[in-house]
Image (tube, rainbow, N blue to C red; front, side):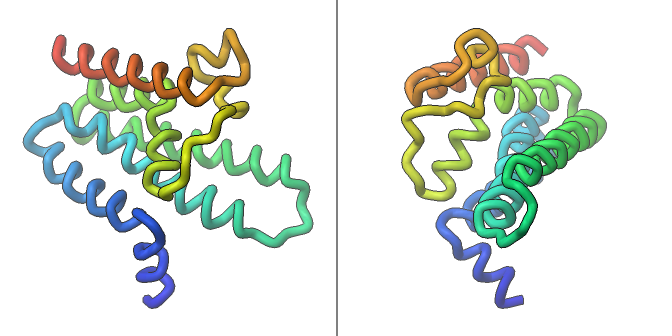
Length: 160
């Protein structure tokens, strides 16, 4: 139990978990909030999986193999999260959450909840809409892209 409490005390992990609980409750009354629940749950998975498991690991496996296997787990988790939110709350809310993640909002949340400054270069964001065309993205490009993705998601939720 002490280990669990220590994880919650680490930077703003407790806030991420608390927001997950609040947005879960809100999602039962306002389906639109399930889109942000998607981002918060995906972010919690990333903090616990990437930050705690991969960064602080000791292993003999090459880093490239470990990171690729984590990315597969992360993608499978996000697909499962999409399905659960779609079934439980609303498919449009699940799609809006997926869009916000695709545009990089969850990655920004990762750094904010860990109280770390946003990197100047985002070389792992090649799978985002702008990343497909440009490759490595700057901090300003990622922030702009995530704002655009959030606006697209909000418009989808409003039009629903």
